[in-house]
Image (cartoon, rainbow, N blue to C red; front, side):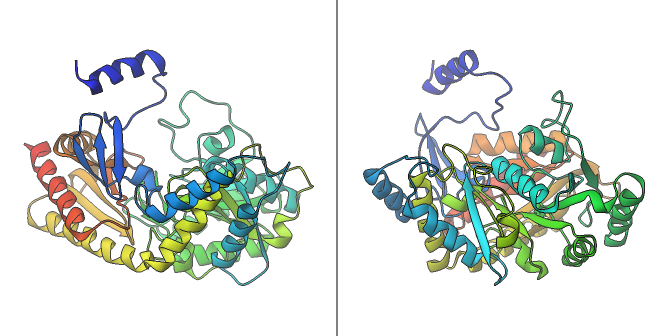
Amino acid sequence: MSLSSDLKDRRLKAIPQGVGNLTSIFTQRADNAELWDVEGKRYVDFASGIAVLNTGHCNPKVMAAAKEQMDRFTHTCFHVAMYDKYVELAEKLNEITPGDHAKKSMLVSTGAEAVENAIKIARSYTGRPAVIAFNGAFHGRTLLGMGLTGKVTPYKKGFAPFPTELYHAPFPGGYRGCDIEEAIAGLEELFRSDIDPARVAAFIIEPVQGEGGFNPVPAEFMQALRKIADEHGILLICDEIQTGFARTGKMFATEYAGIIPDMMTLAKSLAGGFPLSAVVGRADVMDAVHPGGLGGTYAGFPPACAAALAAIEVIEEEKLCERAVALGDKIQGRFKAMAEAKFDCIGDVRGLGAMVAMELVKDRAAKTPDADLTKALLAEAEKRGLILLSCGTYGNVVRVLVPLTVSDAILEEGLNILEESLVAALS
């Protein structure tokens, strides 16, 4: 029995099936955009741990910062004994997020925690209970996060009932979404039929839907949503958990719309591979919660704070926003060439910066989703040494989240494997 097979058997006996696995890989080590399994097989990584490794696996500057902090101390609990890195990171996040108004930041550990705390803050500030999210959204696996999420399987199936006063509005744009006017009309209908806007604390929206299928929100809709929020005294929360930290070609995808959110939720690539998340927002909004109402035992883990400061330095010094645009152009260009040349199964190519996807269909005219082909492509890619993920409400979207530090040669290698794998999956 191979080492991987042995580990798989042990995993099946020790870990519940609900903890799903997207590949069969057991990792031994990783570097930048490459990963090696326990048997020495090498993979090109087009997943980045689901958008966590914008600065690459084991970025030297990030690792050195975390190790230096670990030599000082690993934990005190910020609520018990404060430390400098938490303060420094909050200051940096207040500086780099959109808007020159007074801001404050709080740190927690996961994206779902960031979302939960943003909703707590919104309800405390407004005195209102309701929250509106959008169809196809993903906001986490906690009970409130699931309630806000607009995709049933696998995230919400079998876990009801969910918290009350959570609503979903139509998502605008994209290959399958409605147009901007229809989305605004749907929101207005929601106000007429389900929830008085005077009871709504916040809108929460991903500037580019992640799990929902890599669907960018049109700038015009983001601007309209900002206006509607202001008209009704509703806060606007931009969920930048997957889109943040240079992934889309700007430090934050919200910048494309030219609007200023009241709060932003951040996680994933914030700390370059270490678990950390944040809520950043208007100072008056963030201060609405009473002392002790926010936080957690591991919130703002010191080595992760140090890693985050280093990761932001890497993004700025290596100009990873510009790199993301260049990578995105190459990936989209390759996908579009594939679609035009020989792959009628590619129904759509889309993305923003280096957050790129192609949607696989059985029939372009009918836009019939092809989840089976998507699964076959991912399996073939893994066999050939490429880590690739899917997403979308129909399970037929192939997404690319390669580290922004990837070399041109390894990017090309991965794209070649992807194309070869699609040929094999179709045969």
